[in-house]
Image 1 (cartoon, rainbow, N blue to C red):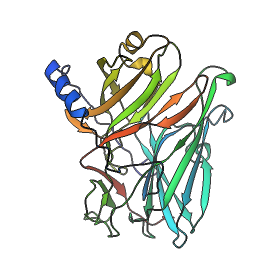
Image 2 (image 1 turned 90 degrees about the vertical axis):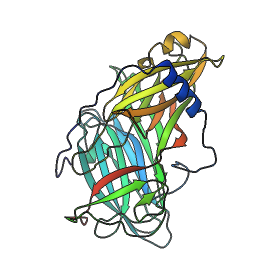
Image 3 (image 1 turned 120 degrees about the vertical axis):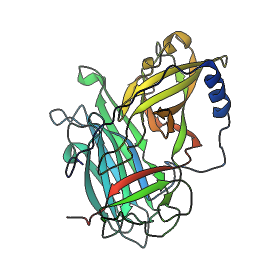
Image 4 (image 1 turned 135 degrees about the vertical axis):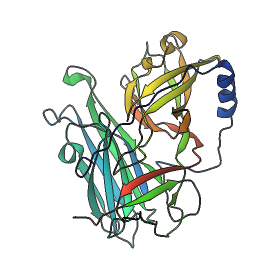
Length: 329
């Protein structure tokens, strides 16, 4: 962690291009979208919140900063929240605690707690010892402004909801043998560490041609470790469709966290011409294995704004290790 330890970036290598057979199999599997299952939402409370972007500039907060809010909707119980800030460049992690009384809301600027860094945040409900606990009452949101060009007129502002995941029981997770870490297991199961599943596939709905609108995507796969050495990054396999439902595929590299124009998707400006629209579905891979994904879409043009990527299918099981220590230590 940036305040306690360092997280190393593990090199990720991508094999040869996917074959036509694999593409066909992926198209068939991606078509099996799970509609009924509830996994990760910006419209309900949870015990873990993912904030898909934060950014700031200490020398020009007028152009770039993030207002982060978190609210305890419980009318009976106070809660401690352990925030983790993941740097998109180095994958290193910084952390801090907040204490929320019942029905309390609070907010802070990223320029005050982790200036000149951009990436994503994870907020975890914990007890007085810093151990993750069930408290499915947390909600949150972001107000983001960032410079997308050289002048103040190119600053873009948008709002996003934090994505919440519920803890599925009130058991206390087991600690590591040395007592310094615990695990968040996003498997939709019933173990002491189980939370709702993360998205295994995400979608961008109805984007305009890059020739018409400047649309940007924020996307990442959460690190596997918020304390020691973890895995981040990978490759995105994108299948996008034009207005005639023709599918096209492309691959995009990703480190700890990625923000970029949709033009980073190979040939998309050619396939989705000016005045046309399309949509895309995305899965992630690391070392030939699938990984969960989270992210948002930002439109920096007329009718500007942002929203989180749609979650289409759950990821079977994903574990994040986090440090355990009492707040204030």
